[in-house]
Amino acid sequence: EKLSTMSAAAGLAACLMLLFSEVDAASEVVDPNPPPGEGLQWTMFVILFLLCIINSAFCPISAYLSIGGWIRGRAIDHLRARPAGSNDPSKYPPVCAIVPCFLPNEEGIIMTTIQHCITQITYPGQLTLMVVYNTPTDMAIEKDLRALESVEFDLGRRVKVLRVHGSRSKAENLNEAIKRVSEPLVAIYDADHHPDAESLQILVDKLEETGADAVQGSVYIRDLQQASCAHTCLARFIGAEFFAQFFIFFPILEVISSTGFFGGSNALWRVSVLRDYQFSTVVQTEDIDVSARAILNNRKLAFCPEARSGELTPADLQTLYRQRLRWLIGWDQVTLSCMKALAKKRDFSCRKAFGLFFIFPLRWLIMCMTFCAGVITPYLSLFYVITDWGFWTRGELYYSLTTYWLVVAAAVLRAVQHDSKLGALWVLIFYLCGPLYITWTISLVIIGLVKIFTGKVGAWHVTRRANSEVNLAKQSGEAQATTNGAGLLDEEEEGMHAILRSSSPSGAGMSRIPSWIAFNPFGTFRFNQMDEPLDETRRPRETIPEEDGGVISPTGSPTWLPTRTQGEKLKALVLPSSFRSSPLAADRTSLH
Image (cartoon, rainbow, N blue to C red; front, side, top):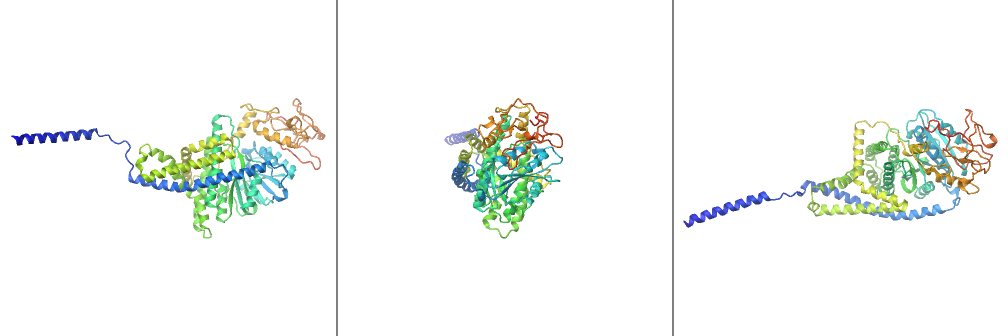
């Protein structure tokens, strides 16, 4: 009986234990964040390890560049503070500045670019401006461009105009222009570029000091105020992107690879070197192509971000998309061809070979690692706790984040040195939007590679600029603009006043006219008697006596260039009034 009782108790205990175990199993909570698999852990370990190596190089170099940039910035401030004419012109070689343009797209901005280059660049040496253009049809502005060739500007500066018949690209225009350059140095500017006053002098000094064959300056957005808030934000963001590229990323590449590259505009070349190469007409980025070929031939290219030039914002997002896609397709085209050429090179130093590999093929790996660190890692953190990745992977993640933000701090510091506080804030915003930016870039690279390998690269799209259209809208009353008493737009006001102040005997700005020139809102000018105050109530005259400075063209319309006495030089250049194809043609006033 005792045995049966003990057996029954043991059986009951066993049943209870089994029941409780089942209840415990049923009530067990499933971990919502299981540890990552071993394969995923090793993948992230390798990616973060490579990223840590790159950041370990980028971080001290960016700190070094910030300190060096501050020192060079003080030197440039000293250069700006020098009185005009303090530099000996004989110490500076003659320079030819080439401005290639597709005239139908740049008709509304080319004259302001010519005016800026002739009157605002403070280069002490001889400067010749060559405007080389192509156009499918004859345009009215060509007459005004050709008229500039007969004018001798202040400091002996001259303008040459060349139309390249049959040209269909910027590369063909440049190839033809370089054949006709007689100066030892050639600067290249896009049609929408306005170089800073001391920019060309800084490039020449850098070229002579380093013995480089070419020096590339930096680019910024000069039309930050747009018609809408969205366009203004776009302009600010692109400006921050350019600053991060030209002041941080490109100089870091130069330190690592011992070479820079040509960015297409705001660059200075030795013409003897540039004549050894022809700009390619079959790639989307002729500038990167000629850079790669020059580097492969052991030419020395350098960066000089302190030499700055402002360009205009793309007109809209579609234009920006086409522009960036063209850039990335061009980079990929050059990368694929460069890899083949680099494999055949035998007279290349290890550092230069690594530098070329770092600039071109390795950029794909860097973009992939940045995408994994900036996009994939935050996504994985939604499913896996960071402490479950292991000690080494967790340490790599913390280290890469720390070094990344140190690079960001260096970029913001340089922005404070060279830009406004608002510009520095936008540089910080740009880095905060890094995951979105790298996703956008990776997407364009994939699209570009697909187009290359499928043979569907497509035609070259002209980059429409926002500012020229906005200015036309402002002038025609479609948008409001703040003007000064003479009706000048804000963007042109400072430059116009500077020209007038520099040449006006009285120094009273717009109150009295220097000799025979006065400006009106539409870029035309009036001929007046010597130092005659501007009479805004004067009505236009159809004919002007030659003794007053007026000249009538064979077509019956007054030309926009004044006559000059023997030895007199033109001190100011203004916009012509003969933009017949412009929407404002009906609104423009004739010669007064």
